[in-house]
Image (cartoon, rainbow, N blue to C red):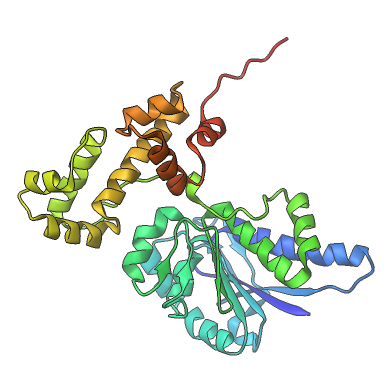
Length: 329
């Protein structure tokens, strides 16, 4: 029997991560029981104290055991912690040596959404790939530069350490773990019962590019503002550097350092974000949206759009455009 430890950290934690994970693994045991088979999982909530209150006292969780009571486990689930992250990591520091000890003892660890911050604070992710909620990507990079962040991915797995993308996409990782431990048929059954789309592997269709401006380089902020104002016009990196009275080499170096994008990549992201908004809100067809944001080559536009969103422009429009629903009586 596999022992699963679902952490109950301190701070404003995600109830859905904890309850949903517990329910899915419990249902696997229930499915097996209904066919006369023994349970596969022993599932426990593990905390630092016997009661954890969060959401300004609206909710409380009573862990079944404390970390000192768990000598060995097989799988640890770290839910999202939605508090100020630096304060949350301090409040949950006691989990860190226990997580390291359990991993070295053979346990696997999976972080859900921004639970990745607590996992990364152990150092176990250094040099490894990690997913998190795309909205927290910049903060994660700044705090954990030795981790290879892949913010567009829904699931990562390397050497027994797993991570997932944001919010309810975390359940895709839980399905993956169900498949690993209980088989493909059980994962498909869970996906149908809980209505979770199986094998979704990208957060890209849900990402909103908001321009990485949480830095102190005022000249680069000017460069970003220029790009965001003039994205539909044709201009070169040399022209941008000249406008800002800086060498192209220094501009590119500083831009990449604080935004994690090259200038060309940043322009592409700004243009595609504008195209997404056009396709969502207006009746523009794909070509009209393309021309509005400064593209003239339909192949280049489609290629870049799909690279950044995971969908073709037409598929994106069909999925997200606002339509008036007419009810015929």
